[in-house]
Figure 1: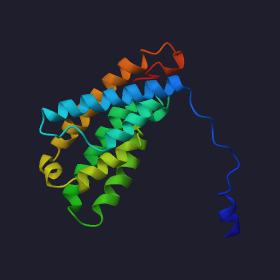
Figure 2: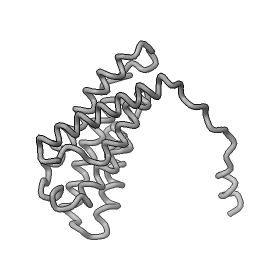
Figure 3: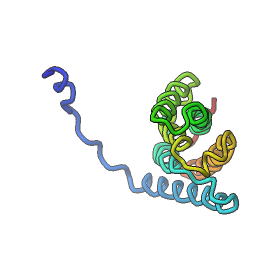
Length: 176
């Protein structure tokens, strides 16, 4: 047991704060991305804006060079996870197995498809716990809000991240 807890000893130090310019670009992208999805949501009875998009905003605007933030991961991870989540709800309904099945299987599916995007786990979970309005969508949930919302956020990421003169911010690193 002692060896187990020894593994949790931190040896590093907290990295320094990012430059103000990076913080401003991250803020600007996140603001525009969520604003665009929210505006589209207003025209679609509020169905474009889901909680997992907040976490995606952190990745694609705050760490645009990260593997998890690339377009393949953003769009693919959300879509794969939405498919898994809706399927889990159809199979397990409101049972206590639905949520863990949706999240764990979405993680496995994202790994298998090389689309790992951490907010995808939340997208799968929302398909299960999202309530009657989400459940009524069935597999349409995959298209709207998930696919369309993630594409809108990708559009903003492409515009904002490439407005910076800093080549370390230019997006994407890869498409497929």
